[in-house]
Image 1: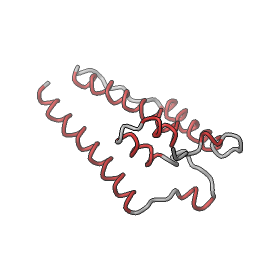
Image 2: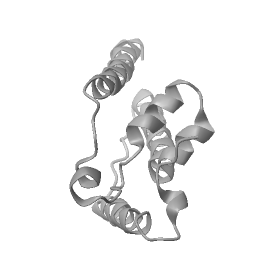
Image 3: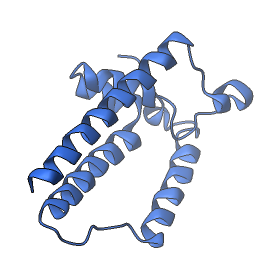
Length: 129
């Protein structure tokens, strides 16, 4: 148990540091979405960087308005990681998502991209508040 804790804590810290550094780098280089720049459409990830920055500032409503789907998927991912961390400490088999779940998420992302570019559904687009 103690050995697993010694392995887990640095892993969590590395993930958080990597996320923070990535957001800072994207800020410095003023990253622009390729889909938005080339095709003038919103991809499923448009607004995710601003969403993550807002989460780090504890501005959750603002984060949700930047990218609703990624916000929900992030919550699901955190729950999934915590669940697997608990299984890891209990020495049980870790849960790995099936190909069906990955396919469903992929289809959802494509549908989200289509929906957020339809006139009348502007509330799905990244909005500055």
